[in-house]
Amino acid sequence: MLKASGAAAGAVAGIAATGRPAVAAGAFAHPGLLHTRTDLDRMAAKVKAGAAPYTAGFARLTANRHAQSGWQARPQAVVYRGSGTPENYALLYNDIHAAYQNALRYHVTGESAYADTAVAILNAWSATLTAVNGSADRFLAAGLYGYQFANAAELVRDHGDFESARFQEMLSKLFGAVSDDFLVRHNGAVVSNYWTNWDLANMACVLATGVFCDDRAQVARAVDYFKHGAGLGAIRNAIPVVYDEEGADGGLGEWLEAGRDQGHALLGVGLMGTFCEMAWNQGIDLYGYDDNRFLKGAQYVAKWSMGGQVPFTASTRRKGAIGGWSGSETVTAAAGVDPSMIRPIWAMIANHYTKRRGMSATYVTRIAAKVAPEGGGGDYGPNSGGYDQLGFGTLTFTRDRVSTGEASGSPVPSGSASASGSGSGSASVSGSGSASVSASASPSAAGKGDDLAATGSGEGVAWAAATGVTALAGGLLLLRKRARGGAQ
Image (cartoon, rainbow, N blue to C red; front, side, top):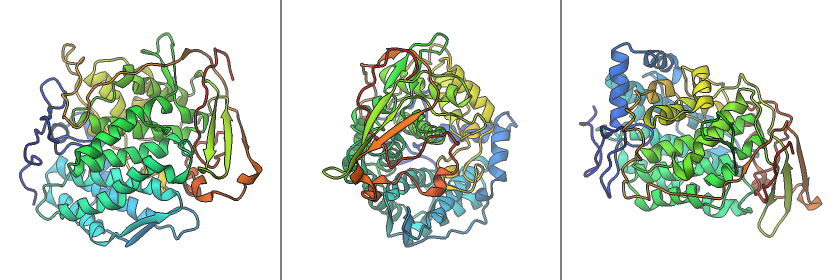
């Protein structure tokens, strides 16, 4: 059975009347990752009342095979992800999504069997798992499944049978510490070797682990990396150029991985949205950071994914090992897209900007409506790409619009990190282009640095749209971005 709701001592749970997080200085709000107590109560009340679109979102949840109370965990002592290893990480992500979906279903229905199932899954893994191994893809596993694990656990942290201390130890040592190390050392590669989504997955894990474990320093590190990090997940590296566009609700921000392929760009937008949402629920406004830079990036990807023409500034980036092999890649245009490709990432973003903040977000709103009602893990194919987001945003993130006078504010600072920030240096340019990529690498690169070079296992690439862009060995450093209009 669950204990009374409310989180760690001293935390102020819930949302203030303005729709902004109310978090006491020096405390963490629990539940307070992707979903707050107010969010969970809203879902339950709306579904009980038969309100749309919540009922459609809930129907997607109940239809998912992972959201059933009969789910049996399959914990492993060692999880492997990456070529050259006996990959078994699908067991992990399926169990995590089962834990999350059962916990979510509990909060909507109040039926304890679902909470009990979620707790049994989490307890089984924390009692068994000793390592996350593999090729460089182990960092993807740590990042993606670490933030998801934390979110599932956050929903049942007050359950009387949940082995919270043991789970915290597992999450910190096997996921959070690995992700922290990746952001510092990037697996011994130059800082740009790994694409944007690699940083973002590990940033999300560090932030989620910090909140779940009440580690203020860890949360501060994650937030600082978002603002000032050297890697491609930091916001000005992920969105290196901002364009003025009439009617684009403040402009479009070029998403770096749009020059790679659609699938990974969607993954990155979903991860940055997840990062911003978890921070917001602790009183830290990153959605609005640098003049709503994330909104501009999301608008760009939404328009592009629906088949719209977007400007693009050519960029050249470096890859390779520090003191070892090296190469470079130049991307000259946005990749091609499949407008039918969907991922459950848009409801969260659209509802924040249009409902919480009362802003216009034309392309994001349009694509959110197109993909609704959003499902979750298991609804978007059997491979790992279909489990990169927890999903169910139609149920979990749909909200009523706050009044005009309330919508302009930022969340109340929690004390874990600065809740506001400013930035400058955005290039204002215009242009458009079709997909083309050229790449070069030193002859010595062949056959070397394979551990650095991984960009995801082969099956993980399968769900990405066919764009004509060859998935190369890793992400790269943006060197210059100063095109003045026209296709590159």
